[in-house]
Image (cartoon, rainbow, N blue to C red; front, side, top):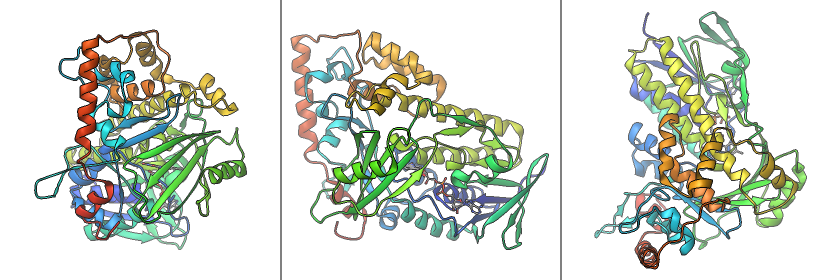
Length: 494
Ligand SMILES: Cc1cc2nc3c(=O)[nH]c(=O)nc-3n(C[C@H](O)[C@H](O)[C@H](O)COP(=O)(O)OP(=O)(O)OC[C@H]3O[C@@H](n4cnc5c(N)ncnc54)[C@H](O)[C@@H]3O)c2cc1C
């Protein structure tokens, strides 16, 4: 088997640029080209992220923090605040949360949550509740020792990645791919509309929802997630952030009549997106509801999608990454982290094989990809199944009909045992993106009914209340998002 020398990346959205960059930085001997269609453009949505994505950008790709912030002008994210379920709100913070144990208390945090302010339960929750981010050193620099992620506008991010990819030596080709030739070993060449032809030994399909090579050319079957995730559209818009309005350090998620709505803060904008099911609300009515609840919103547009994945992402000499390989609606902002993990795994497999393609690489990649997509689907199912905030036809349908897939035994466990972090044992096998703490944050946040009731002693309650007070006290000295970005080099007053 001869090592591959030429790679063709199809697509210049975030998935295509991240794949090309990872390949060229880690395997510089490869000749990498990226083909993108200026007519089709990029999806233009996808702003929220999670800590694994932050680690990929800075630790794996080696992009310096300050450079990233200067060029992409992101917001900072410490978790998601949900306006879902019977509570006024609840948090899903990054960092230690429901599995945390406090010294001198016999149970983990979740068992005490309803005996105080839910926003003071751990340092990570208190950080969100206070709308703060990082601590300060004595010299006023930041202590970046806690998990965090970014709110980064899709087009600005892709623009920055493009410059990085060019600098790394990737050849960017503007053109519309009209067809792809194939034989029994996979794709043999790409035919552009203007008669140019491109050939490589491996093709990375990052063509977005079109899935040009994996779906359209190779005909890989799809696994449909609609029995779990019924939303299929989003109406998106935003407005210029008024001066003096504090930036939120988290994504806000509101329950809506036929779905939910994100609020994502950037230094210069506040963006909103209502994710809904077209079976329960028309496009016009969804737009009206969004506008009514956000009177300042400017022009809006509608994005259509379906939740699901392809059975395999690596078929013959095609590796699909990003929306071309699968998509779950953006409720937990998982796509960028999945793109990151796919790029890293692909590169590591090529490094270890000396750039020769062996069947075991695709088999491992596919098994892992399917497990990750399905784990995200299962995790999202809890949000719909147990959100009792509204009784609109959409929500009554979701409370009764949401297929919880592999999450059902974990939900049964929590119903019998309460918020027990021993749930962690269930996650070892499936290598999930979300762990016990995440499950417990959502189930407890939504007040899923359980048969279990734990009554702490008076002494435990005193220890708990002191702990909550100390969390509240500690976060007062942390930076705001604006302070953190100014120090980290946003390069302008925010
Ligand atoms: C409503 C919504 C909200 C989302 N929110 C989030 C979020 O908060 N967080 C998150 O992580 N993700 C989110 N996502 C997912 C997000 O879209 C992806 O994370 C990310 O943008 C990856 O897109 P992509 O690169 O796969 O596709 P695209 O951006 O669509 O890029 C596809 C590329 O392929 C090219 N192409 C296609 N066909 C051809 C052809 N024939 N010839 C040449 N080039 C071609 C296009 O020109 C383009 O360059 C959201 C998605 C939706 C729909």
